Every structure is written in structure tokens, then in C-alpha cells.
Image 1: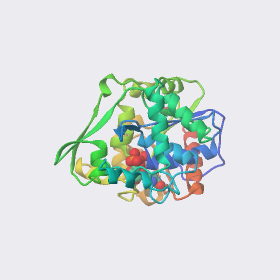
Image 2: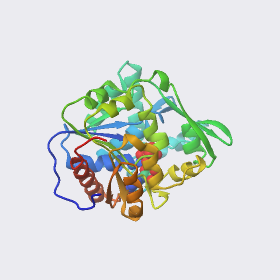
Image 3: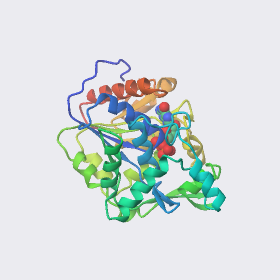
Image 4: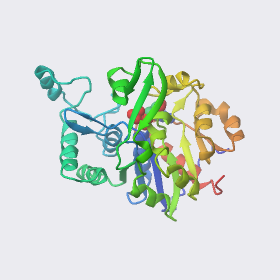
Length: 328
Ligand code: GDP
């Protein structure tokens, strides 16, 4: 067990972070404050992606991108800060769809992406271009170039992810999840290359929703096998603090999927995949239970409220990873 923070042992090796939107974006921003751009690759979930107003929307890629550029709205938890909403008002006047909110600045991202995709660019090309435009140094990579779509089985029947998440505000009871297209979707070659690299120091599963943000990435063809074969330690940061999700439906989903809503249950869910697990200080009592799963434990303040707390947690996670020398 390690709860003592030592000076950061950045060896210059590479780090791969697997992430969804909100929680993942916060830690990604922290990691970007500690590592150089060439060291850090962030692989984002794209199973939430969908089409709206005729545009391709990639919510998790955008959340990470805006957070890395310090342009995200921390209070709302999604989208850009200093946003205005006149496009949505105009769309309502025309009788167009209005259940998903798109800000006036944000719409430029979706037009830019949709235009490039229509001209034949890959999602990675588009993401690189958007990141370059926003002055972002780390590599942000979509989990796959293939389309995968999360479907939520609820008491109201099967729903598309954004219908469940945004339109119905996570109110329906979740009975199960499916990732349409996953059987023929490949892990992005840019992520495969990093997982096979000799200079990979750590793989970090960000504090993202395990079921709808991390599972789609882990379910891609070849992903689990590559993670198991990687020599770098795999560390997850708990997205659950004291039995609650900081934002979003993770805790509610756990209860509905017949699991306790706890940081320990997330560690058990990832199970053998993990070498290390970061528990919040409020969940220190679970340390021995997590250790009993054969997973090393680090206890840290994991609530990220500003850039300093994001960077501080990133330093702790990297130091923890550097101290794990043997893969389980
Ligand atoms: P989504 O794709 O937009 O749902 O974003 P994520 O899956 O990346 O993030 C949702 C998860 O992030 C939720 O389970 C939250 O509890 C978790 N989360 C958000 N902020 C924090 C934080 O500051 N600390 C921790 N530990 N978890 C957080």
C-alpha cells in the first residue's frame, strides 16, 4: 500500500490514458501538466458518438480536447466556457431538434469535423487537426476508426446512448448495455503501436464510467490481449468516491446492474486487468479488500476541482505506477 507521495519519477517514457469525457478529461488535463506532449497519449471512447443537426458529434473526444486546451466549462461539466446558445434558439424557431444542446462556439468543432470526414479524412486526422488548432501538445486518439454505438437496455426498452444520457437524463432504469458494431471494430492502430512500445511506462484507466466509457475501449478487438501483454503497469483511478459518482450515472447504473455502488466494486469489476488502483481518501477502508484482489493500492485525494488538484492527482498516479515494478 502506498499513501506517501515521493518526488515525481518521470523517466521520460510514454504514458497511455484510457478515458471517457468528464472524469477522464480532468485527469488527462492533470497528466498533460506533468508529462511532455510526446510522452502522453490519451485514447478516448467514441461509442457515445452520434449524428445531430447533420453533424458528427464526438462528446468524449471534445470534452478531453476542451479540457486539454483549458477551454472547458468546469461548472457545467461539458462544452466550452464563455459559451452562447443562439444557434440552438434559432434551431428551435425553425422546429429543428433541440434535445441536445450545442453551443455557438462548439458548433464550429462539429462542422469542422463533419466537413473533414465527408472529404475522406480519418477521425484521427480530424482530431489531430482540431488539437493543433487549439494548441494541444499530447496526442488525443479515438479508440477506433470503426463506428461503435452504445445501446442502453432500460425499463423503457432499448435506447441510443445519447437518448438515455441527455434526452432522458439517465432516468430510465438500466438493465444492460450493448456496443453495436464492436465485433468488427479494431482498436486504433495508433493505440496498438503504443501498447507494443518498449518505452511505455504506464497505462492509466482514468476515473471514467466503467460501463459506458471504459468498457467500449476494453471490448475492442485485441484490446484486452494487448493490455495483458503490455509490460507497463495498468492503474485505474476510482470514479466512485464514498459511494457516489462525482457526476453522471455511474453509481445509479451500478445499483441497477446489481452491484454495490462502491469504489471496491469498480476494482472488482476491472479485476485481473489491474496492477494498481487509486482509492479516494474517503474510501481508505477498502484498501485491504482491494489488496486481497491482488491489486496494489494507493490512497489519494481524487476529487479534481481545479488545475492544481488535477496535476497533483496525476503526479500521485504516475509515482504510484513507477513504484509497481512487476506485472501481476
Ligand atoms: P462521460 O463520458 O462524460 O460520462 O465521462 P467519464 O466517464 O469520463 O466521467 C464520468 C465519471 O467521472 C463519473 O463516474 C464521475 O464519478 C467521475 N468523475 C468526475 N469527476 C471526478 C473527479 O474529480 N474525481 C473522480 N475520482 N472521479 C470523477
